[in-house]
Structures are given as C-alpha cells and as structure tokens.
Length: 327
Image (cartoon, rainbow, N blue to C red; front, side, top):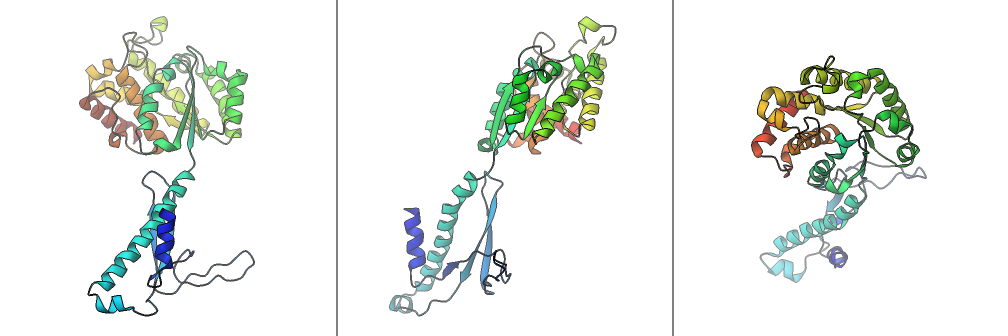
C-alpha cells in the first residue's frame, strides 16, 4: 500500500517533487566509468533523516519544480496551490517512511561477550534488562560465560572459550578475573589477561576489563594483606587499570564507582553487597550495569526507564558517583 501511494504521488502530472540520487546540490559525481553524473539544479533541496533507534542516516535530495501547466482545478480553486504543496510534502514523507525500515534493518548489531565467574553471572540479568530498555536495545547481542569461581587463567586454557572468542564475531569481550586474584597475584592476573587480550585482538574485537570491588570487610582469608575494604579495593583498582593500559583496552571501572558510592553514602555502600559481603546485591548489580552502559555506549543510564529494583534516590547516588569516576 505504501509503495502504491508513493508511485501515485510521483506519477501525478501536477507533482512538483522529483527525487534525485545526489550527495549535495550542484556537486557532480564521477561514475565507475569515469563519466560525470548529472548535476542537480540550484533548486534541489536536501534533507538528512536519522532513525530514532539507529545510528544510520541518509540524505534525501529532491527538486521543487513548477508544473508544466495549471489545470482548471488549480486556476479555479482558491486552495489549489495549498493542496499541491501538502501533496508534495506527503510524497516526501512517504518515501522517508518507506526507506527508514530498510536503513534500520541494515544497522549492525553490537555483539558483546562477557567472560568471568559469579561476579559476572550475578549481574547478568540486570545488565541484560538495562540494555534491553536502552535506545540501542534492538542492536545489542549479549552472551555470557560465567562458571563459578573461575579465573582468567582457567578461561585462557579452555578450548571452548578460545573458540568462542576466535569465531564469535564479537565487537567487545569483557574479562573479569576471580575476585581476589588481581589483588593477591597481580602477575598471574596480568599473564592470563594479556593472553586473552591477544586472542581478542586477533579476532578483531575490543577487550574490556571488568574492574571488580573489594569485599565489604576485607579479605578474611588474607587479613594480613587486606584487613579492610579499602586496602583490597586499592590493589584491585591498580591491577585492572594497569592491565587495561598495557593492553590498550577499555576499563569498566565498576570497583572505582563502588568505592565512590561507599564514600558518599555509607548505608548504600553496605547495601551494594549481598549478605556474604562479597557478591553484588540488586543495588550492586544495577551499579555495574550502569558502568558497562556508559563504558560501551558513552551515554547516561539516567535517561533509561529502568532502575533494576533500586529506589530513585539510590539510582541518583549511583549516577552521581559514576560521573565522578568517568572524569
């Protein structure tokens, strides 16, 4: 039906709109054979259209011309010229409506693979729901590989992980090590991280390091080194930042944002954890999801109508802390 309406409009003898494939008025273009394409006249008008849910855009040039001759209706009816103008505008927008779906359909998806353990697995639902509520929703594809307690060294030696990275066609691969390893064994972390980064680079993807957070009361198994949260967070942040810089990778600074929330609001800082003082609560998962959204898409999560079960006040505190760590 839409195509029929377009053809009807442009088949009309009184139509004053003509479409022309040109990049700019009065700009000549060379064809593949080297011949110069036809110039558009000075009365050619250009409009740039962009889909609200797509990053793709296209120009739609058209020429306003005078009708060959006025018919009796145009001469006798006082609104004849207005009717022609309205018809011409509708013709243009009918073309726009016909073309936009094709532009949108051709928009490539952003494919993201998350590799980690339960620290990634327990934010999976919130990350997925936040991304699905975002303007990029229909252009995002997520995949997760998160067996509990595993290290990046384990993933580096896992043939399934290697094949998934190499053959997956990913845009981003997110890496998260076991929660203590980057702080306790920074060399071990760096070796595994650089090995995985090399695989990711070879596959044409971008590495993203998921900087995790210190445990609420320090590392109880290693109290001599990390007697409290801050001492553990400091070493985690250093290790992840150092490796991201060395690998020329992106850093999703979840741990730094976590620290900023704890400093600004002690009550919310505690509520970022589940009762075990290690894994993320719904507040912690929402914080992590917001950091990933900003890191990957460089847009504010505050504009997304999704809160992950946290209160508006909690969300605003997370957003303000996120602004600080992104500076």
